[in-house]
Image (cartoon, rainbow, N blue to C red; front, side, top):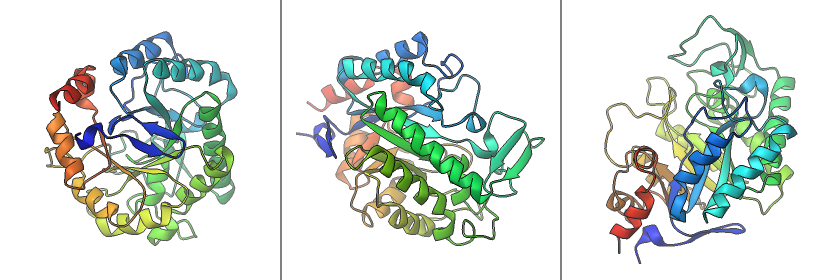
Length: 327
C-alpha cells in the first residue's frame, strides 16, 4: 500500500488516508452563518469521501477579529445550527472534519483594529486603520474567545479544531518580529512572541478536553528580511508542541506564499527539519499537483499528511483520481 493511502490515528479519530483539504476562504456565508451555498460547496469538495480530513475555512472568533465580508463565524451560539449542518454534510460523505478558527488582528475588516504591537504587517493595504495595541486584559479576553469558539466547534459535531497562527493574522503578528515590537513578556525573544499562542493552546485544551484533537497552523517562516527564520521556527514548535495533536506548517507573513518557489511542497525543507524536533504529525501544503508529488513528500520524510488546495479547487474529484493513480 502507498503511504498516501495509509490510515493515521489522531487521538480518538482515524483518518482513512493522508490527504487533507486545507482551509480556503470562500466568502459564501450569510453574515457569518453557514449558508446553503457553503454547504453545497463542501458537499462537492468532499464528494466520494476520498479525503482523510477536511479543514474548513478560517472562521472568526469575535466580531472585531473578522477578516472579510461573508466570512464564517464561530463567535456566538447563534452559529451552532449552521455549523452542525456543515459537520453533518462532511460526515455524510465519509470524511473527518475540522474548523479553523482565527482572529485577523490588524487585517480585520474594520476601521479600528487590535494587533500585537504598533506595526502593520508589511503589505497592509489599508493603513488608514487605527491600531490598538493589545493590553494584557485584551489578550486574556482574546484567549478566552478562542477557547469558547473551539467549544462551539466541538458542540457542532466536528472531529477537531485548528488554531490559525499564520498568514499575518493576529497570532502570527505576535510570533513575527516584523509586527511585534512589544517590550513586555509578549515581545522580544521567540519564547515571548509565542506566549499568546501557548496560552490559546492551553485554554483550548482545557475547554475541549484531552481527547478532542487540536491542530495548530503555524506560519513557520516569514520569508521577508527581518522576519521569522528556520531557527525561530524550530524553537517555536518545541515550545508549542505540548497540547496540540497535529502541526500544520505554512509560511509567509503576507499570505500563503514562499517567494520564488513553485515546486511541490513549498515548505518541505522546514517541515522536514521540524519533524526531527517534535513527536506529532505534520501537515505540508503547497504546490502539490499529482498523487506522485504527495507520495514522494511522504516517502522522503517531509510530512505525515499532505494538503492539496489549488488542485482540489480546480478539480474537486482530484483526490479520488489521485488515489486511483496509485493502484
